[in-house]
Image 1 (cartoon, rainbow, N blue to C red):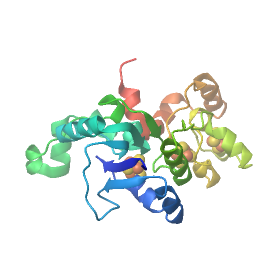
Image 2 (cartoon, rainbow, N blue to C red; image 1 turned 60 degrees about the vertical axis):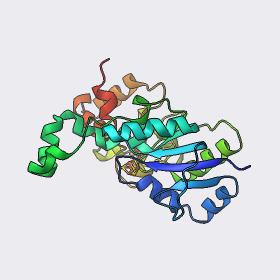
Image 3 (spheres, protein in one colour; image 1 turned 90 degrees about the horizontal axis):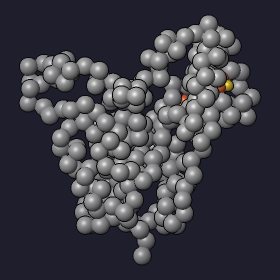
Image 4 (tube, protein in one colour; image 1 turned 180 degrees about the horizontal axis):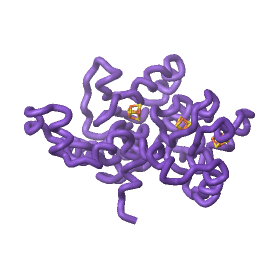
Length: 248
Ligand code: SF4
Ligand code: SF4
Ligand code: SF4
């Protein structure tokens, strides 16, 4: 029997789900290995089997209802995969945690804000155990297909765990530091093909850090180019403020 797979979304733009839809023909190849039974964004049929072999979950957890729904998915799923920066690191959503929740509600909804449930945004792993994560905002389609294929075949997927600079150098890009920009590439997990530096922008760390980032080397690179850590932190925090705000 093919593994039953469900896809779920919490607080996010659902761009990672869209990236999956955009896999098009290659998605059809993966569908020969899995039985995709539940996915609001991508399926017209509705199923709600009591057990799933794989749950693919995008979005961060930012309401009490999200918390309860995620726990229920965790109970049903043998393998739970966090899809994209919102689910993996808390992503952009965690920026709101730097304000009071009442202030956030007032800013967005005015007087009507009081009726909305909102709590500080968290990555999935802050609420339930997560077996695997697929980083990025959005996820990389090739990486998604490869990870789902591996999990469906019972193999352990392996994500790149070396800095983005390696991919960037292989592409023979001119380093953006020499163009007066900053970049998080020396400490960020590779796997996106260094897409931002390839198009002339610095990396803002949507894939999170490598397991053992050489922070000292990055600080030295920043210093060589006249930059201080504090000056680049706001860019790093775009996708990683949840981790940055946790007590050491
Ligand atoms: S990680 Fe990015 S693309 Fe994916 S759901 Fe979150 S905001 Fe959207
Ligand atoms: S542009 Fe960024 S990723 Fe590329 S080599 Fe420079 S620091 Fe590394
Ligand atoms: S270069 Fe950095 S910010 Fe851009 S997609 Fe890759 S990890 Fe994300």
